[in-house]
Image 1 (cartoon, rainbow, N blue to C red):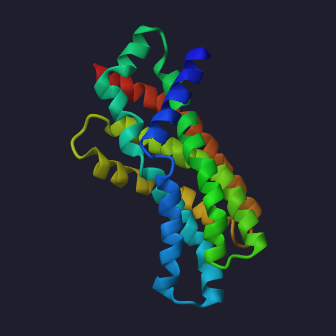
Image 2 (image 1 turned 60 degrees about the vertical axis):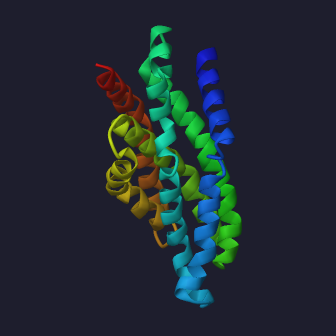
Length: 215
């Protein structure tokens, strides 16, 4: 457990030192600021489409730090040292998933509040949006980490990671945007099921990918 906490703290510190904690927040706010310039100042149109746009921005923001999630530790030998000390690859992935979500999910949910104000979303929509992000951001973090393990060590891994992650994220985007309309209860349940599945599978698949890359 001590090693687990050290990995989480180390990854959070590395994200803070590299400004990685602020990058998704700045990206979300920038997209929310530019969106009204693209579709015009129609308040009703902004309120009707803004929630879905924020889900797209959250998805893209989750992909920004993919390059630093696994590859630096793999290239510097940190993953090998942890393995030699008896730390399982699955434990490493779970610790990195916790660190990635802590550095990405809660800050993004806080940034959604001023972004929702810019897009003229009403209070009920903001509550549904925050509930969906609370359930969906662990899945977005897990998906980013899983793709990072699969592409670590490959050429042009950043572009390849985006191509792999975006199709896999489509169900999350559908369920997440569905939470903002009629039948939001069913969409929240599907979003929760997808989130649990991704969070459960990522340590297994990610650990196997790290071992395969070592051989």
